[in-house]
Image (cartoon, rainbow, N blue to C red):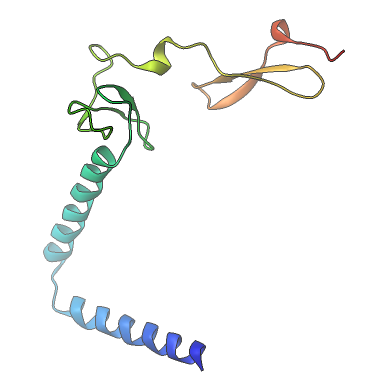
Length: 122
């Protein structure tokens, strides 16, 4: 019984959406899409948690910074004037069970083998 009610509600919502969009012109839909895109862009900045008064990268890979100290990004950063932790840190390293070392390379978004850092198990 519960599955039937859920399916009926989905069909009703689909028809309501079709009827709501039936009177829209192409320019209306484009304006709606542009508004959603602007809202998503704003949320990408304001919903990203960063260190207080610091900078970090958001999920899209953009540098964002906190100016108010609340821990949420307030603006996009500029690598030429803002301190970016990833620019000054050593590359991430991982070692597998065989003692073989790998370093993360951001340019290709992959792990590269680095024999000079091998640590063989005892």
